[in-house]
Amino acid sequence: MSQALVSHKVSLTTLSPVFIGAGEEHVLSPYSDFIQQGDSLVYIDTDKLQEAMQGDKALVDAYVKGMRQFENNRSTFSLEDFITNTLQKEVQDFAARIVTVDGDIQKNQIRQFIATGGKPYIPGSSLKGAIRTAVLLEWLLKTNEGKKQLGEIKMHVEKRDWKSLKRINPERQCFGGIANDVFRHLRVSDTETIEEAKLLVNGVKRVSLKSGRQGFSKRRSDIPQWSETLRPSSTTSFSLSMGTPRGKTAFSFLNEKSLISLFSIINKASLDSCLRELDELEGNREFRDFFGFYENLEHEIESLESNEAILRLGGGKTWFDNSIGLLLDSDDFGSDILFGGYLKLLRIGDLPFPSTRSAIVRNNIPVSPLGWVKLAVLD
Image 1 (tube, one colour):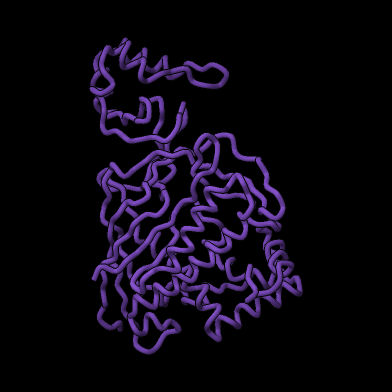
Image 2 (cartoon, rainbow, N blue to C red):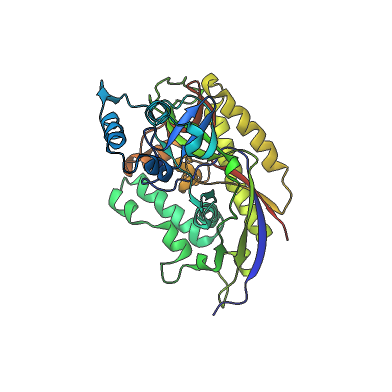
């Protein structure tokens, strides 16, 4: 039986654009859902659009015919022309809301941010998943059982024993199975909803690179994924509660119900991630804006109060932010050769790794990473 929960209200402020997708089915089409006018996107109320055509077969036929017109495998249909010329209405007559866009979206779709009642929020599962990864790294590094797991991973890599390596599951050893997962005693709510005005549609690309020590690649995907992101400095809050099962766990922050101790664990993982990015991007002129962001982030992490933490969540994280990779690519595990062997054995990739970054792009230049937020205890 768990003891009584200790709950805290925690503020969240975005430090970089944040993207958490609503799902593959939640995409907006330029042929039915929005019209770009300068640096604004007019989201169309499709019910009103259907009402304007209802009962008029000629209008419906004109809309359907327009949607089927293609030239060089590209639709030539313009929703704005259809509204102003065919319906002889104003675009604003069908406006559901206005969202700012950074760039020329042309005929691309938009991935929507997860929302409830039309208002964006950050799911508790996204927050808890990012916290869980930081705690796993700490467990591997600081506990006897974790060190044993790390030693077994190292041994199997050295022996090139792929089958044994694949069977190792540090996360299960750390937290337990589904039925007895100790992390169920950490509860994280969804955040409060955020003002729609905090959404900004950005182009997001995976941009290829090599480390600054080895030059860099200019290869990049041609078409960005346009996405609704939360602007930097967007604020909200959520509830974080801790209880402990009878008997001690391997996690002192749970045993003591100490949010300060948990934040210290989170900050160590975030600082390690930040320093790794600085090392990888140093001297890379194309990613100079990234480098500047991480220089500022390093300073901010090192200047945090004990009741503050910096965390990365949502889309755009690297493999290192979602795995035990930060620990494996460190002196605590072994050499670069050993880490490279791990990547090859599990068919993850080759060094230098990873070879891409998800980036907010402007004029085809990467200008910002995604997903960094600052937490602070409010009570």
